[in-house]
Structures are given as structure tokens and as C-alpha cells.
Length: 292
Ligand SMILES: Cc1cc2nc3c(=O)[nH]c(=O)nc-3n(C[C@H](O)[C@H](O)[C@H](O)COP(=O)(O)OP(=O)(O)OC[C@H]3O[C@@H](n4cnc5c(N)ncnc54)[C@H](O)[C@@H]3O)c2cc1C
Image 1 (cartoon, rainbow, N blue to C red):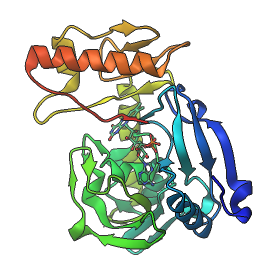
Image 2: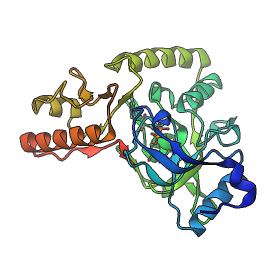
Image 3: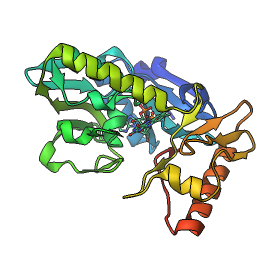
């Protein structure tokens, strides 16, 4: 594929993706780019569209499993400062999709704006959190959104207001769109009370992780009224190991990639879990983890 001459310096060919994902496995992207500005991003997307090259955004890689064959297209990172800015205006906060969710939360708390702190401890970027309606014990991110700015594959930027957004458990109607930025509608609160609450919530979230390892994922979505952990436990699969991948024994909806693990191991283990849970409970577990 020929990207315009002035964008060539942004393109890396056959970029390994493993090191950019939490699980640390999988093959390369045919093309990889981290644009420095919105203009560069738009040109890259238009250029890929003209040549029928599929495009995906990679955030922090905490919810992506890359297959061993890699991704035959263009992977874009929105991590550059221009695409990850966070700004407060009254009770609203605008965040670039590439901003870390943790940064957006601490920014809001520091400005005395509440509503996001219950999401403390969820890894990843704002864009991915909105796309997948990230949720914690206190609720879902979607309920705080006033508007989302998206980039269509022809390079058009448009703003979708809250009344046209649909959020359900770990889902939104934004799937398949590239999120550029989000405006949150937050509530004014006392900064020191918010800060203490945030610290507590962060410690709770961190203590809930069964491993101190970085190479983990939370593969399944809790079905309505059920806990994935309970369903996997009842199917007798807690702690199960396949190849170099295993499930946690106390919280089996956490998967750990050991040294030498492959994406095939992960896919195989997830298929077996789905099969067994379906046999035992009749419930078809849905994946949260995005398999590329
Ligand atoms: C230890 C651990 C704990 C977790 N706990 C929770 C939890 O409590 N609650 C929860 O909801 N999730 C949780 N997750 C899952 C994960 O953190 C979330 O799904 C998070 O939102 C992923 O963010 P990311 O930037 O890492 O996304 P990535 O893994 O990089 O990408 C995930 C998906 O989002 C898409 N995407 C990324 N950016 C954009 C964008 N700008 N526009 C459109 N699509 C985009 C990607 O293409 C991909 O399909 C947990 C994961 C781990 C590993």
C-alpha cells in the first residue's frame, strides 16, 4: 500500500503488537502508526479507506488478544499528546480518546468533579472505555457521557449527542466507529472528599486482582443476573491450565498468560470454558476480550 509521501515517516511495517498488549502475545500489524495530530489521523484513515485497508485503534491493549497471524491492516495508536488531552469546562470535561482513563479520573477529581471515580482501577484509555461501556461496582461510564466525537472512515468528524448514544452492559452503539473524544457531564463535589473516595476505590480495585502479574485479561462479560466467576467455578474449571495459559483459581474470569503462551492457547481455553459453562448452565458466555 502507498501512503502519501508526507505520512510515510509515521508508518511502521510489520510492527509486533504483542508488546503493546497486556497479554503480550500474538503477531504483527502490517502497518502501524501513531499520528501526532488530528489532521494526520484523518489523512491516514482516508488513505487506508481509499485502498481498502482495514483500520483498528489500539488503546492500552488491556482488552485485545492478537492472533498469531497478526492483523493484516493498519493499527493506529491515539497516544500522542494532541489526541489525549483532558480539559475541564464548568461541570463538563472533554477527554481525547487516547487519554488514559486513570488520568481522566484524577483530572476530574482534582477539579472537584465527581461521577467517574468508581471506574478507578480499570486499565485502558478513554476511547476504549466508551466503546465498551466500561463498568465498575458503582456503575457504567456511559451514564456520564454528554457527547462523543467520532471519525468516520471517509475522514468525516461528527459529534453524537447523548440522546443518540446507547449503552448497555459492556456494550455501546459506537462499536466499529473510531472515537476521537468524549465530553463527560459530571457533578461538582468537594475535592478532598472525592480524593479520599478515589484512593479507597483504587485500593479495592487493585486488591481484587488475583495476580500481581501484568499479563492478564478479563475475558468474559457477566451475563444478566449471573457472575462469570461463579459459572466457571460451577463448571469445575477454576484454575484450569491449557498450554501456557491459565485461569485464576479464586477469580476464574481472570486469565493469565505464562511465559511461552500463544494466542492459540488462549482461544482454545476460552472455547473450552464456553463449552463447559454452556453444558452445565445453558448459558452462552459472551467475550469482553476483543480477538484480532
Ligand atoms: C486486570 C484487568 C481488569 C479489568 N477490569 C475491568 C473492569 O473492572 N471493568 C471493565 O469494564 N473492563 C475491565 N477490564 C477490561 C479493559 O480494561 C477495558 O475493556 C478497557 O476499556 C480497555 O481499554 P484499552 O485502552 O486497553 O483498550 P484496548 O484493549 O486497546 O482495545 C479494546 C477495544 O477497544 C477498541 N478501541 C480502543 N480505542 C478506541 C477508540 N478510540 N475508538 C474506537 N474503538 C477503540 C479497540 O479497537 C479494541 O476493539 C479489565 C482488564 C484487565 C486486564
